[in-house]
Image 1 (tube, rainbow, N blue to C red):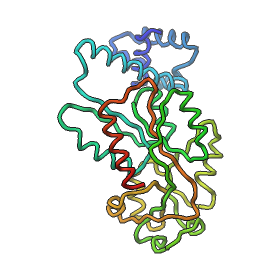
Image 2 (cartoon, helix red, strand yellow):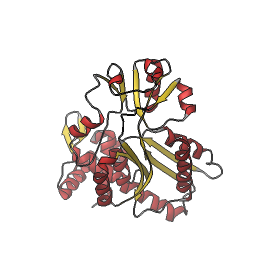
Image 3 (tube, rainbow, N blue to C red):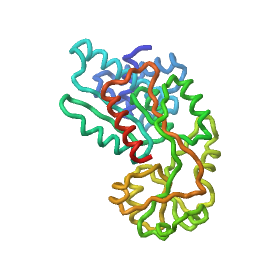
Image 4 (cartoon, rainbow, N blue to C red):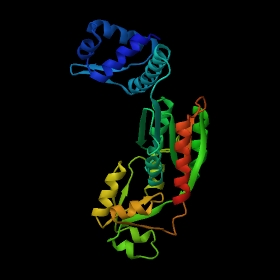
Length: 306
């Protein structure tokens, strides 16, 4: 595979047109078009949909571009290493579920980033995107979350994709809501107590090889008529403290976070479902001292709150 053709495709994907890519690459647009067609022929896929409005990626094209980004990034690192010596900056990247104990571990870990230069990337997302990020070498560490009853599906996928997996913790979800919510005054909350309230939920349930409809039915049961789907955790907390009718299922939340947003945490004895958080990384990858520092901080946070 011609790496130059790959660079041309990546530039077109970023700019959305041959003419814009031509200006950046200083190569005639017909030459770029020809190299992309050769690449498509070699791979047996269509990378771009071509129209009068420009070039847009096909689903296969998006997948290819993600691979291309990882490959070209690694090539750049190799060139820098051998041309200028070992990189001066340490790098740390992790893709995680939305969880307060993890974000607190990360915040404490950040206090240790003194001295040498470092670049850190921290992304909160779902398990599907975390697996994607590591598979394409965009991130080096990941934490995925799944219900215990789906463990066999995830273990099978992790083995197939060549990931090391180490369980961090397991827990049942708690409920959080505003201190001023009527639910906050209940000593024992049942599933029926929640039916008249608004659930705040993540909009991205995922289990490999299991139909999405089945996962949604289990993760988002139909006893709740009103739901607000929010991907980003801080916005969820803002809504919880503002709207007294809202509640949310969460992994254990530190008291300092609850106090900051004026929230309370309650258990629901009817909820018996167990979830697991699992650290993953590629089998061909060796953890750095910086990554081991974070993992130590993660376990300390887990002991404090779960």
